[in-house]
Amino acid sequence: MLRGKILLWALLLTGAAAAVLSIAQMWWEPMAWTFFIKCLVTLLIIGTLASFLSAVDYDLPGSRGKIALGLLVVLAVAGAGLIIGQMWWHLLGTKAFGKMLITVIILAGLLSFFAAVSEDFGTAKKLKDEKFID
Image (cartoon, rainbow, N blue to C red; front, top):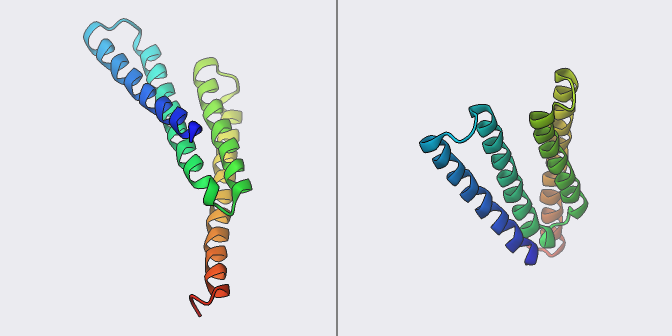
């Protein structure tokens, strides 16, 4: 439960930071627009990641696919780190960055598909074993 509260606070703080940053930029323009956009996109990525991690933290105790969810978390954090790193520091060339990001997305999609199918068939099998369905 502690992780859920930490993730909730992270989500709330990133949203508040984005709101304050946007209002300040709109009224006083304290930073260059490219820097402002990078900050806003970074906050958006962190907020989205916190939201995803919160959902995983909620589902993890009752899930059959704990390993799959763990791997999805690793891929999500890696993808977010890759995007933020590329945006701020241009760590890779455009082609290499695109290939790595697409690889992470494909692996996450494939893993999500396998986890969903496994969960669905596992639930149906459990219901059949307990004679709830034919």
